[in-house]
Amino acid sequence: MVSLSSITAGLQPTNKLYLNDSYLGTVETTLLRYVPETRRSGYFVTTDTIMHPKGGAQPSDTGTLESANFKAVVKKVLEHSGVVVHYGDIKEGTPREGEKVSMMIAWEERYRVMRLHTAGHIVDYAVVELLGRDLLSSRAFHGPPESFVEYIGRVGGIDLASLERISNVVVKASKRVYPVWVPRQELLKTVRGAPNLARLPELETYRVIVIDGVNAIPCGGTHVANTAEVRGILIKKVEEVMDGFKVVYDVADCPL
Ligand SMILES: [Zn+2]
Image (cartoon, rainbow, N blue to C red):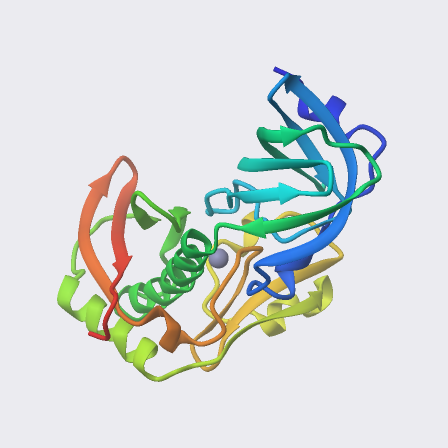
């Protein structure tokens, strides 16, 4: 196993195009570094990426990389010190550092994650509507096999049907969803209904995902542009976990 710090040594942070446009399914970029793991697999770093790495409550994107010289399948995307590393299998040829490459996302899986992530922010809004924001959220995951948001505290008083109803009112209201970039001094003015602000890292600028009139939460994930694209939210269960409770949800393929 090659270490991520040796793969990324001396490289500038990757230009993460998905932060401004999560609908990019392909991009032409430059292969900055290729570190083979075996004869048929290795690690790719490119100038730009449209692929979201594993982390920030989202699963890794997958897809393909290809040039005039090679074809590769990207199986996992990781990040180290701002540099995004694509790991995958070589299907054909040999990559050459400095060459132009086309990157393509496995779009169906990614689009579902976009719907699930926006649904996660909506479910959080619905939980806060029912129980109040003095509740602390602990963990979340917005992807298959199971999407959930977790909170610290007792589960008492949460009604699945009400949670689902409030969530789907937001979906049906076709609210715009978009990122804004705010300096640290303006973060508290911009966020609305956001959990765990005390746990945020100290940054110069924060990316905040705004759902118009609903909430505004610091987040680095990929979202749909309108809540209507979520189509429907199913609250599958609310269960007790070690220090609190977990709301398990999914997106439905038809409006609810
Ligand atoms: Zn998020």
